[in-house]
Length: 204
Image (cartoon, rainbow, N blue to C red; front, top):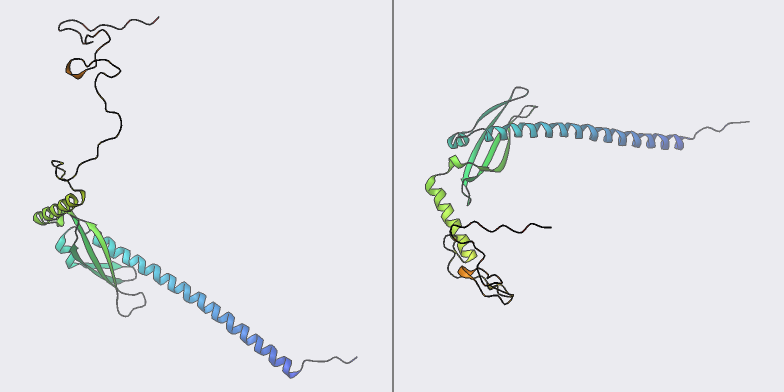
């Protein structure tokens, strides 16, 4: 019995399929490696930026923040940072724009990063500016509410509560002295001057 072998066309088709599969697997493996490298670089970049952010938060002086400084990073790298401070409409609250120049791990030019953070720093405020901001906020609130916190006057008038008006001495009893409800016998229950208060009768 004679066996039939592969033809040239079948061999070429097999080689073409194998080449396509090899190229696809190689591209997928390369993408995985590139993804892991990019993730590692992002983690390093975030860690470096966190160090610069911590240096900003640990600097108490106004002039020291705007001057900035240098940070030694792992791998013999250096990061330079500085902050630009701007006042806000809220007292003692400042918007600080952090600028950091971080050297990459593979060498080359430093990468620049910018971010803005809100910091509460009462020591950075000037007393006159703080008072001005608070006065403007108070005037804005008084305009929105329609009355002042100090005296509660002006155009704000609360609506009266609907319902039965409470009058001393209800249920047909006349009002006693000083607006207190009278007792059934018409006398005030308060003890006379110099006499002890009456004790309630013991329960049986």
